[in-house]
Image (cartoon, rainbow, N blue to C red; front, side, top):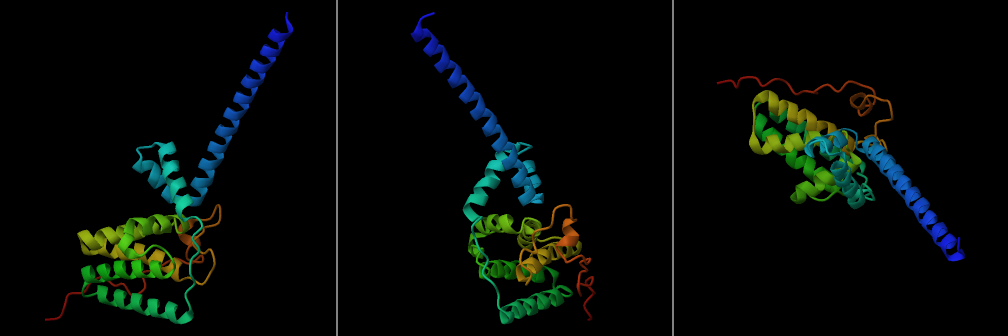
Length: 214
């Protein structure tokens, strides 16, 4: 066998080996990337997969783009006075719910958008972008905000309004928390329990609507 033919065969073999190694590496990165995204986004990952009709690659591409756009966002802290002001405003919303559920839910939606903006997220006028950014850092509770926003616009029965307000309250608690990383549930921990410091989250003074006195 001539020398040039031996060299050619060696080159071809090297190309084949390098190509196979690259394919294995890409597949490994894809598996690790999917696992990482699933761990970070939790319920948002499942929601994205469902929205893409089970296409995990499309879902992971969407979540990866969100992470790239908003992953470096650093939340601005609230000082004590700001935190108290938002807490008082939310308490007023809860009290208003008793007699005016629809108006209270609409006000809660506006308040949550304002609070997110104060923490450094895109302002409420860019709702979709704001939600995408929140989903990167508060994946456990951002869907409650979506529900609150939808019900605030479309309305619903009293029970639906109450459930929407409760869902929004979970994100409100995260955004006003003084505990760093509170919204990140530890691995193996029940998300609902972890997000509220191990305590069950009771619906404060959100009583069932009572009939107005004539």
